[in-house]
Amino acid sequence: MINLSLKHAASIAGYRLNQFWVVVFTSSIVLFGCSTEKATVNNDHGPEPEAWAHSDNLTPSEDFIEDLMAQMSLREKIAQLFMVAGRGGFYPEGDRGWERMHEAVTRHQVGGVMFFSGRAYEQAIITNKLQKKSTIPLWISQDMEFGAAMRIDEATYLAPAMGIAATQNRNFAYQKGRITAKEAGALGVHQIYAPVLDINNNPLNPVINVRSYSEVADTVAKYGIAFMEGVHDAGLMATAKHFPGHGDTDVDSHVDLPVLPIDYERLTQVELVPFKKAFQAGMKSIMTAHIALPEIALFPDFPATLDPGITSHILRDSLRFEGVVVTDGMGMRGVSNYFDAGDAAVLAIKAGVDQILLSADLEEAINAIELAVISGDIEESRIDASVKRVLEMKMDTGLFSQPQLVDIYELTSKINTREFRRIADAVAESSITLLKNDGNLLPLDGNDFEKVVVVNISDGRRTVNDHITGMLDEKFKRLKSVHIHPGMCSADSLEATETVASSDLVVALSHLAIRTAEEISLDEMVSPMISKLFDTEAPVIAVSLGSPYILGAFDDADVHMLAWSPRERQQVAAGYVLTGAAGAGGKLPVTIPSLYDIGDGIILEAVQ
Image (cartoon, rainbow, N blue to C red; front, side, top):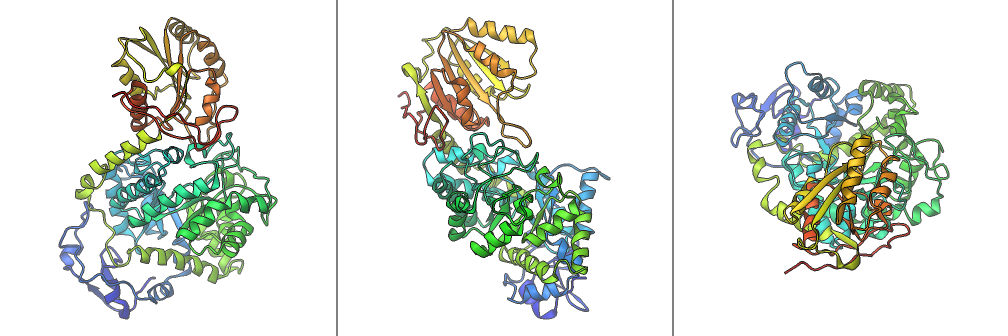
């Protein structure tokens, strides 16, 4: 049982154990800065100005962590290395989702929670509830590559990494990191799982794509470090991923184990370059990749996450990285197809990992590590090294000297602010990349075309391109819209073909979602339909709201434009360029085979 010594009382004022922000001594409980009555108030709305005031903000002393660890059992120390899944939602009494989170925090005493999607107020309240239940303050993390809006509905969406690189503006990467961290921090988050430092040098990569800044290592490093600086300046921890590099794969590690058949020389000259530069710039955490590197790894068939040749020898010994190493989700099939939860957890610790993210079976994983230590398969000193990193990370972020409850009354002034929206709009407008404009078709003139059709092409039944369609509808008197998707019936296909054939301008809006466990490509039914649809004399405008590589399916189009994402902000920016309300100046950060080179991009001025 954890028991803090008397000599640390002044330095950890406000450290909460057993339901209150108190300091537990060997034989007594001393309350700091509030009365017992106020400390026991069940207030999930956040800290009251007086109830949660501290007598001081002293930093815990240097031997605080060692003394804390000395009070912890082996199982408590192991549990600190686990991050479990959390969701910000409404949980009625008896809800299994809440019970799982509650059990992980109270019975298993895990180190932290990684939140998935949710709403701001709900996540804040759940965070407060869990923090109040935790013996040691919880470390809260979230995957926010596209801004906090990637997970929080009300937050600010910012262009994906490749769109940021297209702006050629390093400050936009910094601002993206800063805004993301400001909003995340307002929700009680401490760590962001970004930036992606993978080099997207394989156009067939089904999982990275626009999540990467570029296929050029130095470009990835430039913008990734800027993002990191923004996160750190806002007081949160950034995480470089996916070490040692997930860019040159054609298998999604959510689905299976990708194999990267490269040697160590290639790895050091390409994939490791952004990571090395980020470490030198102050990156404090990395996330491992579930990819196999048979020519480099100690165990050729193991994912890098579980291989000491990658995580210990290369990362720790060669690159001298001393920060926190967190796994990618351990339930991903790149691991779970080949290892059960217990074996995977033991191998991860033996490989050199500090934090185990989203184990497929928490209790099995903790039990397996505990048994491995008791049996001598893992030295307890190995556990202690990772626990020390995790607790020092918490201490450095202020978790032991400040209350970790979210003030929900402040959320509206800290999330999606006017300043954040203004910057995000500027990023979106600067990211739009025009690669082809035959006949100076853009900007469009509402008087030049009588019958316009917008062809929405997606990988599902839901139309995702409504914003651009609405903007064009205001400009053209006779505008129709059709939706092409894999599940459409023959009658709908015939109607779409006839609509396109009778038009004198075609605007094709293509979104191929970059989603877990799905390939980024046109469906085999949709692809020939597109060829048939666009066998027309009318000019064709092709706009990609996602993967840039999809333009290869529209190589004969008169206009090629990249908007990088189907989110409203990116669509509106693209719509402004189409209608002349804004210009385009983005430059391509990758090669589109047989079409465009890095740096391509047409400058288009707005209509005055």
